Image (cartoon, rainbow, N blue to C red):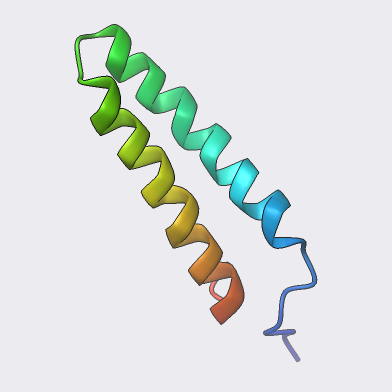
Length: 58
């Protein structure tokens, strides 16, 4: 009934997640957060979405 396997390109999925996280973290950097921490959050969000996409959770 449901298709578990994603046909989306992993690069597109990672870029979309990184852009979404980047918007939130750029606001946090503007408010005084460390830019390295913000970059780590953005990269972590991209990795999590890639894993979820491959497993079929997204």
